[in-house]
Image 1 (cartoon, helix red, strand yellow):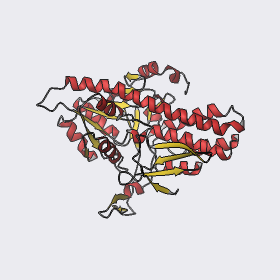
Image 2 (image 1 turned 135 degrees about the vertical axis):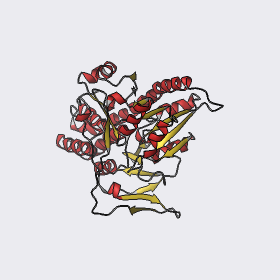
Image 3 (image 1 turned 45 degrees about the vertical axis):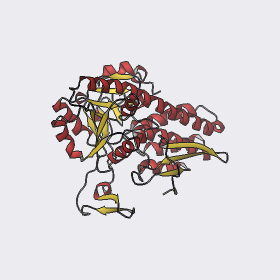
Image 4 (image 1 turned 90 degrees about the vertical axis):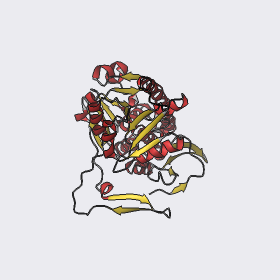
Length: 377
């Protein structure tokens, strides 16, 4: 595992930083496996280290995975930028996390930019293209927040006023904040943009076992000073039935052409409960998460992760030491899917950087006609 160094500064609202040092291009990531206990900046100096970081979820979240993979390709081409080397690097990076389509999208974009160039020009061009992908992600996520805020403001305006507390009650699952993107986040972007606009919101944060990415959401919201409450995954249905949630908003790892959405496992349960209760269920994602080659959710590959993620639990004791405890015997069978698919009919709307649309093929194609026509840009 690559060497870690303790962060000595308060992190910006970006989980990665790219800089030059002694004439060499460098990349560091905020190691999410250390959160919420410690903040570490992890330096990535090779293609191999980037592959490790993605596979072991030191970086996670579909948009961020795509960006880091683009930088990983740039690192790899610094040693060898031949076609053969590029092919091997793209294949290795593409195999790290199969469900998040942003990974394949970013690598495809890098390839279309780099393969036509002379070998000697590829490495420098790779860094420039990866930078462009990163900056575009930040701008797109900000736009998602602005479009999503209009929906949230409308829900709050229609909400019966009860006493002095005029607060929007939101529920989310997994982590789709700035830790999962370059900046702003997807599902949490309307919350952050809303805070700037004076929106009063409280977020019910689902813990999202077994990786507990909800703890990352709680950490983000705490750092930002946004009211929130962490809940057990199984408490979500109760809150929805009790009428204590005004809307559910989640991110996505891949959206099929018909509007079916693959996201962190447990998302579909919240969508089904929200539909039964008549609560709006929104999906926030950039256009790079759309996969028109997948006709429906049945065509989306769902990653199955290692049994040990469920067999062991991790935490920090009173002395500050991190450790793991085994919670089930070695002989018990375990099934650990990382994602599930929420049917389009359970989704109220999809929030993108280009606007809000219905979760169906016609609406998605109208918003992203180039992608629907086979243009992957």
